[in-house]
Image 1 (cartoon, rainbow, N blue to C red):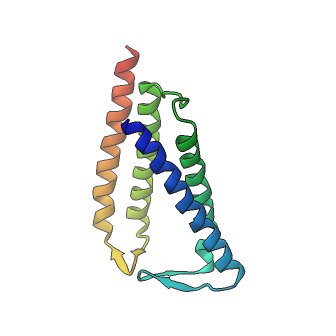
Image 2: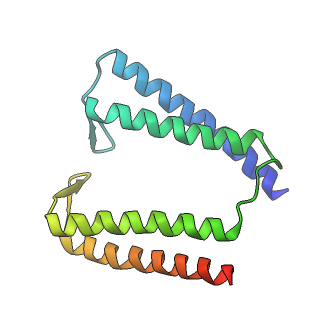
Image 3: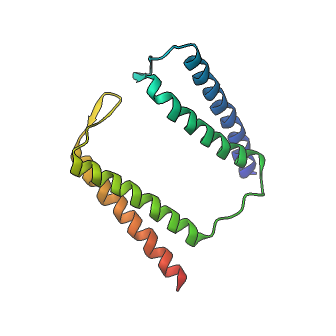
Length: 139
């Protein structure tokens, strides 16, 4: 019964994401950008990435919401390898930011470089553990 609620929630969320996609597309076509929303300034530069993210999220939500019971189970080893790769990429991005000294501002807050060092250590450890567990499953 709990899974049925999750499927219904995914259908509802798919509707919200579709509405967000349509609203952003409409605002872009009416040349309403830049716009301030919840203290975040949205410019025309973020329209394309936002629309791409909305489409990807919509595909995932539609698949989960309307294909109940037919979602193939990912093997645990494949999941661990995929997670290890994602964590490794994020770790390398943090490391690159740390060495290059790239400024990062999120909603007006300048993220300090030392936070990327912590992010590098945490994601590198998670990547290592994911690959280690995946290799143990092979034996």
